[in-house]
Length: 136
Image: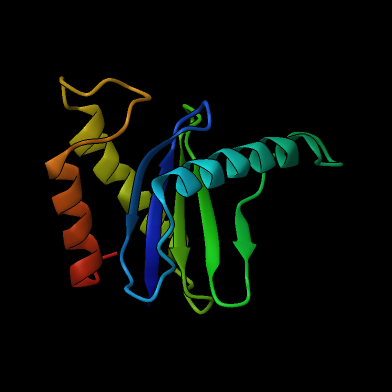
């Protein structure tokens, strides 16, 4: 399994967390990541309204030539985006574990302000442990 990156996008479309894991993944500037997050938020909003058979939660997977982008939408509108290899088949369970880590390490932190950038060493350490040990 190859995990290239993790993004957390707030309900307004702002990038509140971004982390790359694979050295071969293209490095972008922080401004480019913000633009990508906003664009993905817009595409997600549009696709949630395009469903011909009623309500939809929007786009869930986008595949490129060499990577897959899987989007997990929470009940509060926060999006977790996982960039992986095309062969990865367990991205949904990976995103669920990342969401549980977010709930425990970020949302239970009394000093964290919702919708603001995540600056939590506890969250970083737990995500590193999950990715580093393959426990995702």
